[in-house]
Length: 442
Image (cartoon, rainbow, N blue to C red; front, side, top):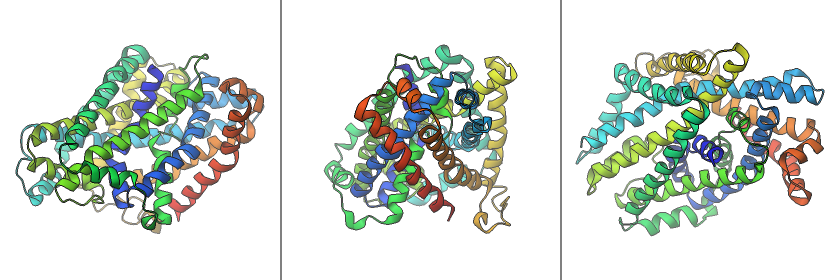
């Protein structure tokens, strides 16, 4: 159960509560959700099983697990850099993810103090713009969020990670159910449910399908080395297939519940469901400011957002900390301080790119990166290049290079169930991930 909660905590993050609702709104609702669920089944679950299996079979950090497995099957030791891509991705993501987590922490106080109550769209927008334009404030919130993350990781597996997720994940579900309960009183819950679950394929575009495929990959923390790191702690008598399926179902359930919590409020206030990234930090605060008990439910919502971001940040730091412990002989505290401090430093560049360095594009000489700030560049490189590349290599390594008998023994799957997973991982998943990879590059 600790593994399930930790892996779910990693998967459930800003992608579920911040990104999923607005991309669903942008891409037409129910048909997009249906395609997204199909992508979870075809891409997400097979790769998650493969990554957890690599971690458990190797029993070490992602990079060392890949090295051990490659040596065991007499393959090139260069395969270890497959996991290196994931560890690098998780490090880069955490550097700017911590900045966004800091926004959520900041908004807990903003909502609780009543600053959103009765305000116009212009004032709400000015509050958010004021936050992004103040590097001092952003640094304080980024530092606080990173300190909270390092505090949990430094305490180790049982005293830190396991204890944190057994408290934070149930609390997250309770908060989400409370918000869904409130959404049911708005008079627009039926409209929101219809929007989410009644497919209208006339509004589904090719781009929407690719967005669904990419988000299904991202939301389960695949290609980051996270599931390999957690897999290294998993007991041999635990079913990888069942736990991966359970984590995927819980992650998807949170995304759908977030939609049921958010869209009734959006519809009740005559707001636009496809409002984009500003849905959480600009559109919803406007709604919370106009509704009865808005300060209370706004505060609950942003506490929920902090919990989701926190559990994901913990998992993003774990692969690098585990590797430093093994490779450099550091103890848990020193490795956490070292890795966390590097992430914190890189996060300062993201903060400055939102204000003082807003006109600076590090790779602006290349057409593909023109106008991309440090923050934009880190987001683009990880989501569009490193994560799909890491997932594609995992599918190829496990599906085409590892011995089939070893896979059967490790997964404890027999007959048609193993054949189904193996066939999908070998033939369907690589093609789907490659399409997303090429589409994002083009």
